[in-house]
Length: 235
Image (cartoon, rainbow, N blue to C red):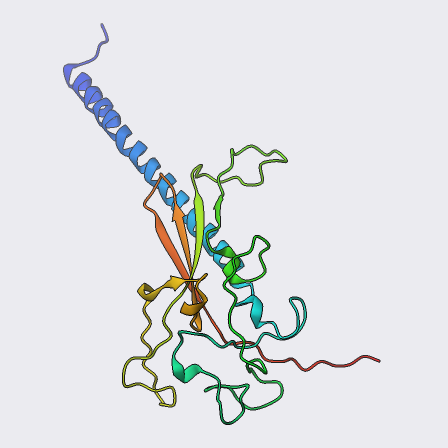
């Protein structure tokens, strides 16, 4: 008896092959989507890490009561901030609304002191990150000169720092039980113009790549100063 392939079997084989071939573009597309998602997650993680690094620095060089390495951070006077946040000119002149009277509490400098308008190459405060750009894409090879190994070969982070308005909604008052704050990032002003200084700095991180749509990370740092810590003296 001679063996062979029936027409039905041949048709079924062609159909199966056709379905397999048709699924290849979808598999490739899904793989590309997976790579793009991985690169986006990678970019978000890099941006969060960078932002955390920026926020770990002091609010302003001039906020250090003493010198750049010692002394507590104090709240500073500003030129264009909400008048209600100015230092109290009558009682407790080193304090403003919200400051609790006490030696170890947050307070301002003994004399009026304003933020710095400088952006220095030696990074010591948040201002110094303004305009800094970095490319985090490496070649993928583990060599002493290649410290990064990112899937995205075109990942770039650019940091900008601005002042934004610290004003309240008209009719609201800092002495109210409920405060209505007019939070508006679009009010941003140059960090290098001291005349625009307020009590809020906005850090804007521009994340760009040719592999996906660019996006912005924003974080905010306020002119609060810090409390003094109780320290145990060791004889």
